[in-house]
Length: 493
Length: 95
Image (cartoon, rainbow over all chains, first blue to last red):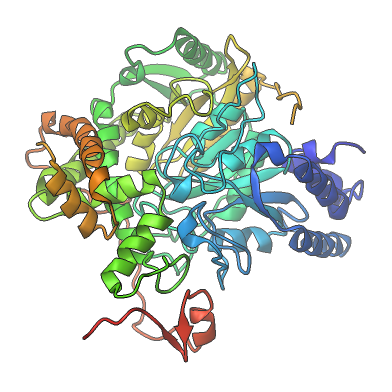
């Protein structure tokens, strides 16, 4: 069998269990693809020895008839996850050389389910960015190309998106604070789901904004997302916000039958200046769900406009607190000091050298909005607006809406460097359709739904009710089937 | 609300990030752009709205106040830039 690395998780799992292939073969195929993919800069720390050990162990388990859900399936792990003994630096200089003594709960859950780790994946520094251009490792590159420009794979999970779209691995982990799974998934033509806040343990995931951060899978199909999400989530006593709820068998819920489901179309997501192609894609998606038997209902989420400004108070505020721990004392980079430098000089020089520009900007904005005299005007007001944004969703769900359909992004992938001179706020607008979902703690999934006129992938987003990932995945499965998206980037790297 | 270079310098110090004097005007301008964007929140009527403290209506888990982990000083120190004799070393703090 050739091109094993191009398999979906589901196909590879079935072939492994049928004895048609081995995990060692599958893992070797991925490792050899990764070796030839340097120009994509998706994998930044390769772990071939760990991968081969895990693959051999998986083959033994399969042979013994004891194959858990991800047994023998090779995946990539975003650099934000702490992986024991393997560099985990959130794409930041400040964590250069850091090798955790412990394993994040999500990666441990995946290993317990038999998954094989190929290496760590590129991302925006501390997950702050929408283009993977703030990484200390340099830009990750989108495998999609339409002219001589290198395109962004999106961010912050840009390396994960690039690696999955380029078939370097079967799937990857991502994290999503304002759209960091769903936007890169849309830019690269893959599936990405951010589950309900509390579904995945945050323990061992380097924190950005703790009330918004959630891990999720980035995969080649909705079925794969169901398989991998189930392996990732579950209650963890080490994260006090982790939900003590049973995890359903998500894959078993994929029937494709959405007759009678009510799909909301929020009028506030029809933005001024939205490209006609995005609007057309959204209309097509709506028609597909209607043809599948869903009821389409126009809805209103009146506070949508205020989601991005609320996010750009809350996320930097939490980041300024979370990133206070990088002080050059316990781990990571410490600046070289001059004679007479005191401890404050050490902190200030270390953080100026260790944090990139965007991270510094957000830490300082967060410091400002939390500072005495501005806390009420900015931070408390943003938290009140957040409560209103959540209420918008609560109201439409209470009125009988099962899921909400929106575009995933306001455009297709743009060229790396094209936003260099733009105001940071322009870059923030990438998250305009996704950030509401984090503020409301809801599950959201991006499904590839078509190509734009240049031939670049576009995604649609479905937003579900809290803890209803199974139902959401089933609606996404119906949309995926109707859209019939099969395009792949042609290999140039 | 407009941020001047003096405020920018104060914020940088509060955040413990060294910003050289010649970089302060540009930093102040960036703050002003972002805060200008955030000002939109003033349009929202938030009378009587409680600030959100938890996005899911779940009570935080409690546990017994007992030691669950520990006795691993080598592991705790293993990533330190400067560790000596079981301590993290830092520049002199007290004269």
